[in-house]
Image 1 (tube, rainbow, N blue to C red):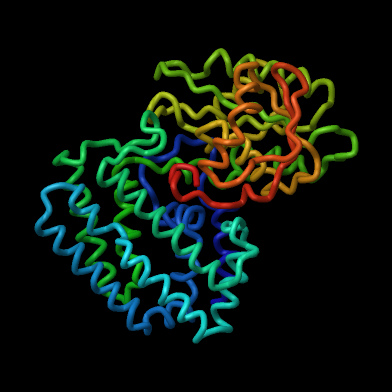
Image 2 (image 1 turned 45 degrees about the vertical axis):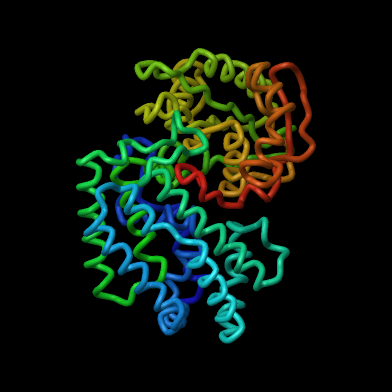
Length: 418
């Protein structure tokens, strides 16, 4: 199977998959969800595992085969000797020497299997998941992508096996203590099952650590990144169809973005601040500023809330503000202001909404000031790029920006919304 075929399969799952935004999402992964998450956060690994020719090359490589055996032995020993998941996490993580060995092996394989790896790099660059590295030479690109992948995997093990603090601990942290006996029992059972399954085939060097990390996320109930997919179905089915019939020349903006505001009370469905932001958006919508409103926000506040900001916002706009269902698009994954903007631009690409048109943001004066004074640096620090171009304040509560293609870059350090 060619890498391009893998990309098509991934898009088929990603866009036309198996989940509806009308149902409450399950708190565990299915195998389809696992594959979707790997595609979002670790697209390199998805391609390497699915492409038959690439698998054969990796399986025959002595360095990578030895590394695979070494990881297996270390994890097996940890399952026998460790008292906590913190200890197991150390065996799962990539050590600096292992990362360097893998990087050198992949570059060497590129040089000895040039045509196959050229196609791999072309696929990864075309996909956009690693857009920030797209202008680099192929060997440097491979090094950058593997380094991002390995460190992203280590971050998952650190947070969801070892209880390390994530960037936003109030909303993204582990669900258990690292020494919780119930948690340990689940992780150990999953680890032994993964080893037994992978022993029956030639496991690639990354497959066992990756499976244990996915198991840790599953046990923690942290499948936020795959909920409500595909975004072109469910509550977005009518807007997705309406996009194709839209005469864009009639509008100044492509969409109006309304960032969510998560309440801290677990019984409050929708924060009053979010309602005010939506009412302002409706005024601009009624003035025909844009044909669609994107409501953006995930299952964020309070910690592990059952309410999704975007879903509840659309319900309010349709039921209380009387907007047609086809006019409101949910973006149900963003967890911060940075990803409100980033994910909105991703929606434009996925829905084939004109990317050259500006986006209007309706919010509060406090968030609008934040967007203009602090968001740029925060995005550079956390994501590595600026989220927009030509950001302009229209009023105290309203701004506009033009989207940028850098938003395609994956962020495996935020596994709940990569």
